[in-house]
Length: 416
Ligand code: ATP
Ligand code: MG
Image (cartoon, rainbow, N blue to C red; front, side):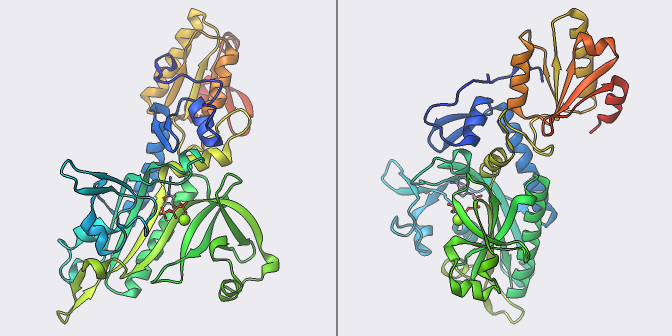
């Protein structure tokens, strides 16, 4: 894509009411637009990153046999009353609305109830299970505070996976698969080094849930980590009893602030019993289905990447999620330089390499400032000087390392 045609303009300042670093940088870089606190629109560069993250998650969900669905945001009161999750006293972050005839509706903040209800139409015998279904869908939560940019949206996109099993053992196997997929997702987005799996509160059917907690001062959570045993505990369940229960020595624990980027949960029959999702076992007996749910906030993950990887010049994207692979920059507006840089752009693009081509007639300093802000992993500069040597100047955004390299060699290394 040619930068002169880019939808969004970069800006020097973020809106004065924006306090989160991730949103400040993403707004300045023109990746997102702030509609109001906790509500952000994705612009073309931001959407490219969002889609890259969503596709990594989608691939890993498909790999474990997850089937993609897309449920509705509008939710019926009667369904949520069956599980006692309609009342604002029970769930404090509902957005509710009304039909013209005054019928109350809710905007889904999660989807255990509707998916369990749908499954009732499709699960009859033990042969219909196990099943894994997921979606990447917009959730609405009337969060009390929303000051963490993309990391705490009032409208945000979540990948939510749900597992349906016949027995506790079968559930454990699905849970392990989902957990493994999460581990791979965090590896692929480049956060595995600083993401800990922490014990957190479980609910009625299991002692603990597990959270994927990414260590960052921008986080709203606190975890305690035993680095040697590689075990972490969320502050919300941190008691002497729990420490004893897990063989943890306090003296060994290190406290960190962290971002809850993912959460995996054994639900038992919490939803299948009240909603009557059963299957007939081999002796024709009706048995409630055992469920699990597994969430990742796509925007929260994107915000977390900005929080932990950016530097004083701007964003630094890992290769797998970057909006483009190469930021090709033409320096000077000489016809020969322009023709040569354009040819390079066209050659790379024809090979399927994703290139943002800055062919604008503006000061080099402004181009480099935008480039640092955007965070594309590799910058490649073509100028009169590089052309005279038959070379191209590449800079690694993360390390800042600059190399003059033969054009032919450079091209040889660029493939998809
Ligand atoms: P938190 O404790 O941070 O409020 P939660 O425990 O309510 O989150 P879940 O209901 O488990 O979150 O949602 C699954 C995942 O969705 C979370 O792990 C997080 O990645 C993401 N998520 C939750 N709330 C938000 C939000 N307001 N904005 C963006 N992502 C969110
Ligand atoms: Mg939580």
